[in-house]
Image (tube, rainbow, N blue to C red; front, side, top):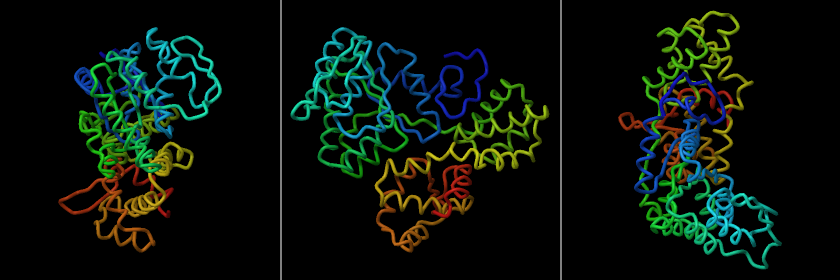
Length: 391
């Protein structure tokens, strides 16, 4: 997609079209990859993963369906959600959807399938056979369609934690579906590593056919280019020292943190009609980006831990992040983290299990040369220390 203007500085929601900055090359890779197979996209929170997936959907909405599956709880939920999202497709699909949804779990009373209202009857005496219904649905969709499953690793882990046999059966079924030439193609995406989830349950064979396509962080060059473009759109003069000061505070990696900092500077310019001096960036960072008024902007980094991890894992993760947030620049050695976990009457063995997951979730980074762990991003470290450092 060629750009004709500057991106707007949209913070919080998904962005599309010209407002999605720096991801054109990645979108081309997605197009090439989905032509030949099924993909596994991994990106942490606030890196623009959902925006990329929504933009990918926008490129061919007639044959692509985007689903956020984070809040689903069962394989039955999954089949019903896919069916609900496939309205407006061919008559062949519509006919099959009506049959599949006819005796669904009773959680919805009616649905528009392919533009046709389907009234759902009372729940069947026994739960429907999700696998049988799922088989029919996937065959009806056919190879020309693509299912984009955002936050799929959360669903997989929830199923496996609740009932390992059910979760394993679901993952194996999806792999079998993907091997059939008449089935739709899939993009599995999430801010938690599906590879780590499956490895923990010794189910790596259920995803070894997927082609991994990690969404890279912004490097310094891309971060500076985005800041220049955003400030140009708002008419804010942006000197080199000002841009460098921004990166010193929030780091270059996370587009969302850059946007929050840019929002604060744009607001300052609109109030004073003077571009902030580099020294002013530090105050804006503390007073705006990290203020209590904007705490909710990052609170999902805290809340999602309960959604994704077991209670015992969550306790260890929060203890580790609280410790690392206070050592933002130097980090801590593994033995120090293990001792801290044990001193809080938590299970040190859990630390070994969650550290790789925390790395893949981009909460922490490991530096082999110093044998230390540290917070992945300096802005996240500062925010965590202020609001959750005593947890």
